[in-house]
Amino acid sequence: MDEQELAALYRQRFPDEELARKAAIWKVLCERYFQRYVEPGDTVVDLACGYGEFINHISARRKIAIDLNPDAARYLAGEVQFELSPASSVGGLLGGEADVVFTSNFLEHLPDKAALENLLEQVLAALRPGGRFLVMGPNLRYLPGEYWDFYDHSLGLTHLSLSEVLAMKGFQLENCVARFLPYTTRGALPTHPALVRMYLSLPPVWRLLGKQFFIASRKPA
Image (cartoon, rainbow, N blue to C red; front, side):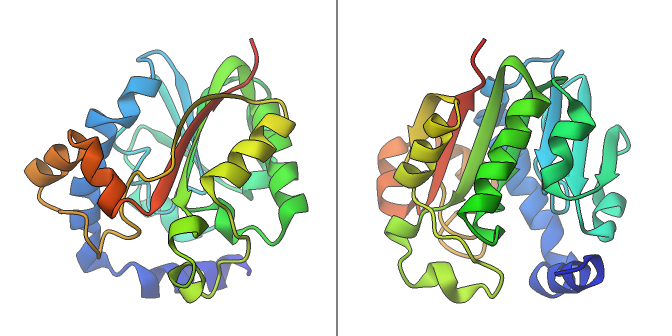
């Protein structure tokens, strides 16, 4: 899929009228959950950043967004550095400077396992020793049919299969949550900020509604 096709797909899938609601959700997710993995002085990379929902709301000294969609740049906060580039270039772009690399709902779009392994090698190259790789994505174990409803989903992953390949490539697993968030922001996840905060404070509810995994791993120090 080239840049223009990707931009057209995103405009169709994520209309502008939904973006404010998504931004409100991600603001709470960053403040109440993801920020614990990011220090104020860190360099943070959002890999396949979409419209910047994560990178716009995380607090860090240096924030970099990488995506092939040229439309992404106009949705990013002013302090975010944008790189119009494939995710597989992250190692060359950062070269051991990143403290945290984050990606959400991206790995399932890779064409095959070889592409995933190559990407993980690039992430290792981008991270400093001890740096973190944070991944969120749909869990095929709990979405056996719905997982394939998106035309551009190509690679099937569960929390266990991704954990296995991360370890195989040299990452150290720090946290693995099999059921974290619901599948989409259009589904069961409450969208008022107060309700999102309540959801995050009740992990037993995740086991009922969660269809996406979250994995935190580290590059060995």
